[in-house]
Structures are given as C-alpha cells and as structure tokens.
Image (tube, rainbow, N blue to C red; front, side, top):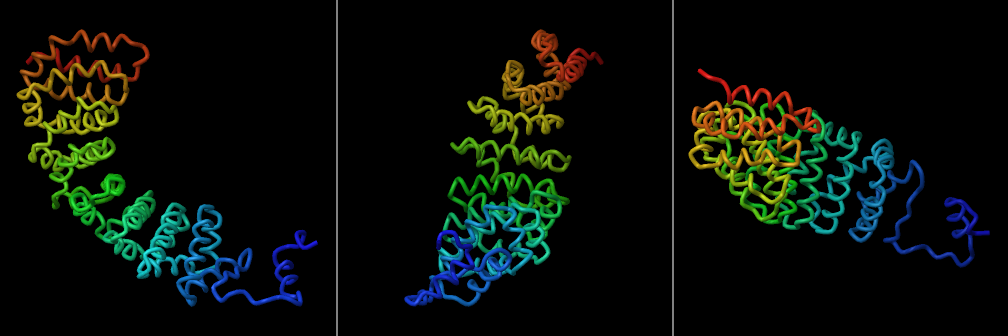
Length: 354
C-alpha cells in the first residue's frame, strides 16, 4: 500500500508509525510543488554547510529544467541566496552556487532577475577565484547573460570588458581562456565597446594568442581582431600594431575555421593602403589568390573581397591580371551563384584602367 501513496501522504504515513524516529538534523526535508524552492532558500539561509551542500546539489539537478528556474524565481528568493553563497568560504559551496548561476543566466527570466538586482558585480568578484571550475562557471554565466542587448549593456556597464583584457594574459587554463574570448567577441557588439577596448592592450594580447597551439583560441583571437577592425578607428589601430602579417600567416593554417577567421579580419584591414602594401611587399598576395580553390563559401567570399582591395594598388592589380582565369573559372560555376556579384566587382577592379 505504501508505494501507492502520494508524497505528502507517504510522509504522513511514515511519521504516524509507532517506530518513527526523527531524521538527523542535516536531513533534507523538501516540500513539493510551489513550496519546494521556498523551503530550499530557507535551508540555504539558516542551516549548516553539510545541509547547504545537500540542498545545492539538489538545486543543481533542478536548474537543468528551465521551467523549474522560472518557478523558483516566482516563488522564492533562491537566486538571491545563490548569489550570496558565491562568496562562501567553502570551495564546494561556491562551485555549486556558480554552477547553478550558469544555468539561471541561460534563461530569460533568470537573466532578467540578475539584471534587475544588479548581481553582475557579485559574479565579477569570482573571476579571480583560485578554483578553475568556478572561474569557468562565472565566465559562462556572463556569456549567457550577454546573449541579448540588455544583458550586453549590463555586462559592459560593470567594466567586464576591461577585466577580460587583463585576463587574456593572466588566465592559464585554455578552456577558460576560450570562454573569455567568446565573451569578448559578444561584448564588442555592444554600444561604445570598440572605443573602450582601443584604450587597452587588447590588440597586442590578441596577436600573442594567434600563435597558440589551441585552434579554437587562434580562431577566436582572429575573430576578435576582425570585430575590432570593422570601424575605421579600429582598422587603423589594428594595422598600426602590425597585425597584417600574423593574420596572413594564419591563411595557411590547417584548420578551416582559423583560415576563415583570418580572412575575415584581413578583408576588413585590406581597405587600408598600408595593409595592401604590407600584403604585397611580403609576398602574401600569391597565397591569397591561391585560396580561390577553397571549398568554404565563407572563406571564398572573404578572399574575393580581399583580392579586390589589394588589386586597387597598381602592383596588386598587375599581379592579379595574371590570375583572372581563376576568378572567371569560379564565376562559371553554378554552385557558387551567390558569389557571382562579388566576382564581377573584383574583375572590374582588376581590369580598371586609369
């Protein structure tokens, strides 16, 4: 009979038995449905670390379900208690609290709660935590939080961008460094972010990361340089720090995603006369034209644009005239129809006569 009872009746049945013994003081006694998360928040407020750890492990299971995150926010101050325990001296409590925050920041209602209560500054305190997994959870939380414009603005408001630049050198864990680069790239779309990052050492540090053995770090370092170089002042800053040659070297990278990121950055920098001259003088224009044989549509689009820019230089135009056949061959392919417009414009630039 007992196994057929609902939870609340099962509890009552057990307590009504003659041999019932009160559980240990560190035993979790959760309520169900709407009272569950309110009970959890109370346990996190007043109980000892043993019970708090049990509660936090249970919370980590619950927050995998977005609907439970919303229910927790609507029925309790559980998020506030999790933020409070981010500063707990117990490493495992901080880890579990940060793990839960990562999931909460991935849900719209959770992000809203973080922004309204200005909890970003609490998250930011843990970027210097000695436990790597806690730092990873915090950077991932900030990444999730900045998915939309309001979140990006909130993160930028708390000077996280400048912190990330410092961490490009300080962070030794490559999986964490990758999340830092991904978060930086997302923040660079925010209002005023490019102007702020140009006041830092970001470009120099990103150039160092282009030489990393980790292919994802090379890719996102190049993508961040591309993002910085989109506005005119960003182009000038990136080119002045001699980024063109390191990016050209990545065009020979064995990883397609890295070549794509490098070609994107160079297609932006190629609008500058100094960048065109650097490419020609160092013999990289031949490599660039040879990349018309790439299979990736995105790489081809970037390379065609870059060829057009370099061909605006007289020496570049003269060299490109000898390779028009490759462009026309690509133009004849029906499977690259979307590129035809850009190829036509590039051929026009190469054949233009003053």
